[in-house]
Image 1: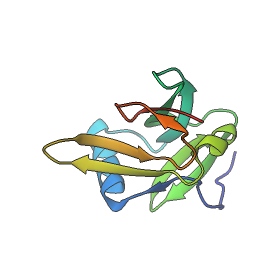
Image 2: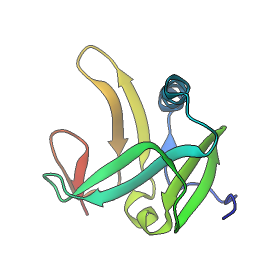
Image 3: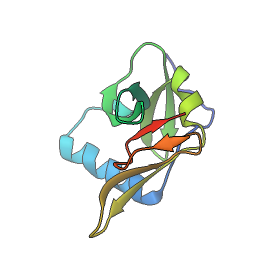
Length: 115
């Protein structure tokens, strides 16, 4: 399983990349771990976003985003193409946000969607 040199279908804002680097350092994860980006069934709108550190699994494609190792199962690109991940650190909201042009419907919490 080698690193894919093509462009990841998902983009990250500078704020998201900064927070991801901080979280990885805080968790003291080895270089075997990368950021998993994907989807899973569930949530109030049908599908949930997956964003967390994990090890590479069969079927994953590997990307490098400004020094951040990213894993994504190749089938998830269909649902996530063009999505932007941001990190909000304001008084009204704090956490990662997902702006997905493929989502036909989203829920109020912002982590569940349908296509």
